[in-house]
Length: 257
Ligand SMILES: Nc1ncnc2c1ncn2[C@@H]1O[C@H](COP(=O)(O)OP(=O)(O)OP(=O)(O)O)[C@@H](O)[C@H]1O
Ligand SMILES: [Mg+2]
Image 1 (cartoon, rainbow, N blue to C red):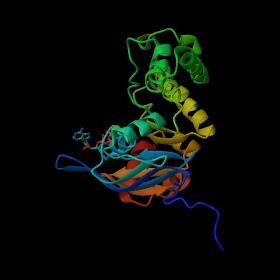
Image 2 (image 1 turned 90 degrees about the vertical axis):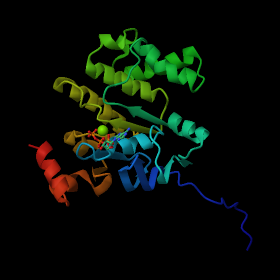
Image 3 (image 1 turned 120 degrees about the vertical axis):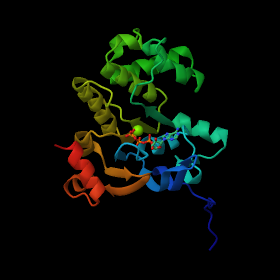
Image 4 (image 1 turned 60 degrees about the vertical axis):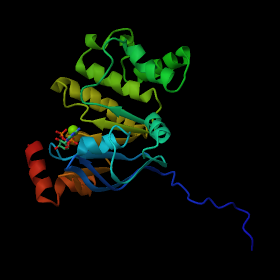
C-alpha cells in the first residue's frame, strides 16, 4: 500500500540536545581531545570532572564554537558545528555559557549586561529586552541591583547576573565552566542554588565543576575526563561509590575528604 506520509531524508532526533561523535582536537602538535563521544538528551544534566589540563574547558568550548575541533562531528540541537559561519551563529544563539570569572562588561550596568545580546543578536527592541532581563534578574534574585555596575556587586552576585544574562538569550543548552571556583566559600551556595533551580526547570546543562554535592543533587550523569579522553561515565551515585578507573579513584580521594 502507498504511504501518504512524507519521509524525511535524515530525521533529526529532537530529543538529543548535544551530540559529540569521535571528536579530536589539537593545539599545534598537542592533542587536547581524543575521540570524544557524548550524547546529551534534552533536559539532561551532565557534570564534567577531571584533573587540571584534562580538556574539560576545551570540550565545552567546542560546543558553542569558541574552539574548533579538527576531527569528528558536533551537533547542537541538530545543527552541525562546522566552518560554516551561519551555523556557528545559530548554535551560539542557542547555547549559553557561564564562565569562572563571570566575564561581565564592567562599563555596563547589570541591566545593560543583560539586554545587550538580545538587542544586538536577536534584534529585540529595548523595552522587550528590558522586560526579559527584569524577569531573569528576578529569577536569580538580584532584580534590586539592576542599575549598579558589576564592580559594585559581590562575586556571587556577579555570577548570578552572568547566569541571568545567559538566560536572557533563552538558550536551549547552558554550559558552565567552573562557575563557583573563583568565589569565596560563603558565596558558592547561592550560585549553586540558582543552578539547582535551573535544573529543576528542565534546562539542559553541561557543568564543569568539582562541586560534588551539586553533582549528587542534580546530575543525571558524571563524565570523568583525563588526558583528553572521557575515561568514565556513570550516574553520580555509582561514580562516587564505585569509581572504575584508578585515575578516577585518585581524583575523588583528593577532592572528597
Ligand atoms: N589555546 C590553547 N593553546 C594551546 N594549548 C592549550 C590552549 N588551551 C588549552 N590548552 C592546553 O590544553 C590542555 C587542556 O586544557 P583545558 O583548559 O581544556 O583543561 P581543563 O581540564 O579545563 O583544566 P582546568 O581544570 O585547569 O581548567 C592543557 O594542557 C592546556 O595547557
Ligand atoms: Mg578548565
